[in-house]
Length: 441
Image 1: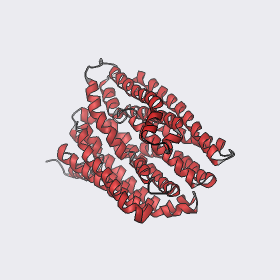
Image 2: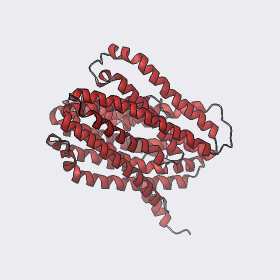
Image 3: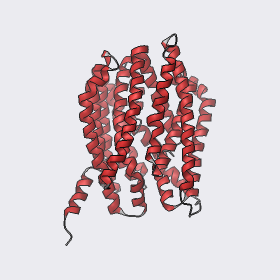
Image 4: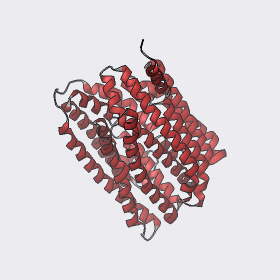
């Protein structure tokens, strides 16, 4: 089977699972909007945004590089080294959870955050953040161990199933606020249970790995060198819209936040489909780089970009055509989100075409080179939100987002081209194909 067909088949299976899970999540969100009101849906989306941003910091970046090091140690038969790495990653999650529980209330008072979603639902937010951070680490390791389906299914299927069961149990509470609070407690406890089972699956996978080399001293310095910049990169890219929702909470009503939040969740689903393409090929890319096989590395980057770009264009067309109907499920007020959602979908095409520059820079030991472009994107988002949202509302928020994403995507592509000497854009695929078509002399 060619790599393109393997990428398409495996990533399609992962994306199909994500699509099914997302359908359940959207159903719950639509029911919240219909039964409890758009305001509580806006509150729920702010809670989830807060959880995501807290959870991504808790492993201190080790989940962002877990796939890379898991693939490297697996390829070299260094099981003991991998065990040391994952022990450190999970220790970070546990330590930050304890710190949050002990110091969080005092920090909330000190920073005057008493009216925020974090303050109003503190313990459920911490529990949910703990479960989410654990799943981040579990998933990264399983992808690096060539088990992408196991890596993604905890978040893509089991979390949505637990969410809808919890909502159905609490939807009949006397008041919407009581039902909402009970739902958050149920979701947080349930996801911690899912995360623990997921963790046990990681442990069950370790004995299958080769163990031909002892653990090496000094590897921790390399872990930190890769992980620290990736905390910021992951915050600003993977959780771009969680940051955006918190920024917009000062300029949009809860109903408008609910509309924009639903649009961003649809965008995140599309992004996951593209990310699944790279998840399937990442271990092979890492092995090619570890073996200094530049030709194979370039070919795999090009193949992944081609599949991701085609997928993003197809998703853009489907979302543009189906957005009005999908948004109407949440209520007539959500119909105004169709045009902003189409704009956001176009941003995914830009990201896919420009390629995984941050990943390639990290593979070539230049992770910090990504930070200026990512910082430019966040600053652009903040400035444009202040300029456009007061006048154009939801469309202003969408335009701010696509300009910021375009700037950082092009910037990262240029940095990778100049520093790592690799064109990570879709042009790499055409270049490899053209070279293969030229007959050898």
